[in-house]
Image 1 (cartoon, protein in one colour):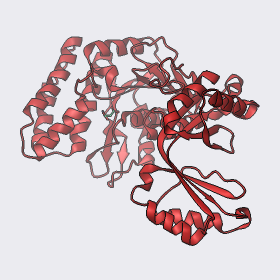
Image 2 (image 1 turned 90 degrees about the vertical axis):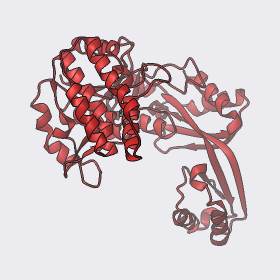
Image 3 (image 1 turned 180 degrees about the vertical axis):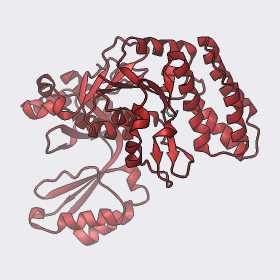
Image 4 (image 1 turned 120 degrees about the vertical axis):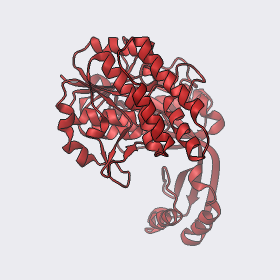
Length: 437
Ligand code: ASP
C-alpha cells in the first residue's frame, strides 16, 4: 500500500510539532510521500511564515527594510532545527533567500521558500529524500497548473521510495517558481497522491475531521466519519470550510479517498472522503451527512398567470441574467411562479437594471423581492432511500418556530435546500442538526 500524507502549517509550526509528525510517520511504513506546508502559527497572534515571506518581498518592493521580518523567519527555522538537534546547515540557504528577496524577486518565489525549507528540515528529521516540487510540478507560463506536463514527470517522484516534498509551488516552463493560491499545499498533496497512485491521501491538520455542522452554531457538533465526494462538494459550496477546493479534483478523479486527520490527536478517527461508489450500505442509509448554510441571499419571485404555458419565459429570464453577468444560485419554480435565488454579492449595483429588464422582457404580473435570506443545505446521499426525511426536517423547523421561505430539492435527492429569514438562521441549523444527529 502507498500513502501520501500532507501536513498543514500548524502541524509543523515548531520542533515539538515535528516530533509528533515523526511519530505518526514511524507508525506506518506505507506513509511514503510526505507533503508539507510552511510553519504556521504556534499560538493565537503568532506569524505564519508564508505571511512573513510575502511581507518581506512587499517591503523590499516598496524600497523599505525587511530585516526585522526576515529575522523572525530565520529564527523560526533555526529554532526548529536546533530544537530537533538536526545536523543540517540551513544558514547558507537562509542567506541565499535573503539576497534573492533583496535583489527584488517575485512574491511567488519568496513565498515558496517557507515550504522549501520546511521540507528540507522534515526530510532530515525523518531520514527521507528531499524532492523539490520543481522537479515535477509544472505550470504553464500564464500561471495555470499544467496537469499533463506534471503527470508526464511522475517518475521523478516514484523514483524515490520515500520522499518529503514541499507543497504550494512548482515551476513554470520558463523556469520561474509559481505558487498555487493560498492554502495550496493541499493541492500539491492531491497531485502527489495521484502521481504516486497512492491508495489514500492523508491530510493531517489540527482538527479531528469535518463536523456535521458549524461548531459556532452547534458547539457539540459530531464529526462526520465518512462523506462522499459529491456530498462534500454540496457542503463546501454552501460554505462549509474544508480543504482547498482545487485539491479535491485530482484525487476524486483518480478515485483516491482523502482521510482528514489530526496531528494533535492522531488516534481520533477523522473523516474519510470517499468516491460515491465506495460508500457502504451503512452510509447509504444515513439520511443526512452534514448541514451547511450561508447568509446574504435575495430571492426575486415572479408570478404570471399561465406562466407554465409561456414557452419562452425561462429562456428570456436566463438571457437577462446572462447579459447582466449574474448567476442565480437556485431557480425553484411553481406552476405560475419562478424564483431566482441570488447571492447578494452578485447583485451589487445590478439590481435596478435587472428589475428593469425583467419588467420589459418578461412582463410578470407581480415581482416580489425578499432580501436578508439565508440558505441551509441538508446534504446526504442516504436521503434518496429514506422516506420521511423531508417530513422530519420540516417538523423540526416548525417545532423551532422557523418559517421556511423557500424549499428546493436537487433532482439527485442528495440535498434539501431551505431558505429562511436571516434572523432564524442559527435556530434553523440547530433544529435540523438535533433532528438528525
Ligand atoms: N503556506 C501556504 C499558505 O499559507 C500554503 C499552505 O499552507 O497550504 O497559504
